[in-house]
Image (tube, rainbow, N blue to C red; front, top):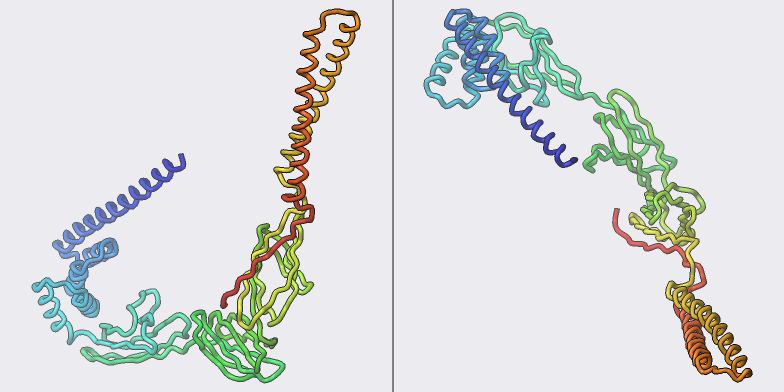
Length: 424
């Protein structure tokens, strides 16, 4: 049922996706027909509006060209210039349309003012006059604007907006370069002794370094701060926020390593040097170099206790096998042979009773001078069977004793650990 439901879901999603594409294509064709009717009727604003809807549904350089034609007919020179330029940059290889677009740009050039907008760094969003007019692309970009005064600004994540005001003359061309200021935070690191600090980004690249007291402006983000003073060192993650100060105090310690503790029982308590450090699986970080006592305990299991040796910048992997404290030391084979010996002894005892009863009956008949041959035979059979059973019970008992001595262990099986090592 689950597989059928899964298949049904896939088919349903595929059908919905295909339906959505079909709906978009149908709407795009409809908008194209509406736009062409408006254009033929010289309702150029309505035609431009319908072409824009079509472009959002099914982007195509030809539609950009049609929008430019509408603005050209409306004498909206700046918009027409922008769309003709966008069309030429779209890579359409139709020679007739490209030729017409190039001629239109040449005709429109005296009627528009061009502004080459750049920014340091590049890739900033461009806005002109009012935000509600939308984004004019990203830097670097050449904008076609009407003559007059315009407010131009750029925005980029992590930076303050940068803006300028330009006075444009008809047919003129000017350039502006805006330099948005990066928003920074400050990181301060202190230490009880003189130390060298490094700040690393998520990729492990050093973004700042210097001696303590460390005080640097860095871009917002998550970093790893490190400090070293001779053989002592310290490391801690830190989040730096824009226009805020993050302060850390380096707790320098000697060389350290790390260890990961796992066990065959999830949630076993890990104790290092007498301090509880959490439950398995557990990562023990920043362990000073040297020998340490480690214990792993879990309810109903025999605890493990041992010595953990830590080397500098090494990582120990400790796999603990806790044994069940209720496990018996007698082997299964001993139980089986011992049980067989007991069963044979019981059978031998019962058979011996039958033999004694038959022997008593034989003596009674013999004393009364009655025929006793059959009873004698019965007595002999029971005696032989009883002897065989007693011999079998004895052999099984001796075998059980041998197994008990050679295959059973009455001492508790200790918990064990395997240690492997690898770099961090």
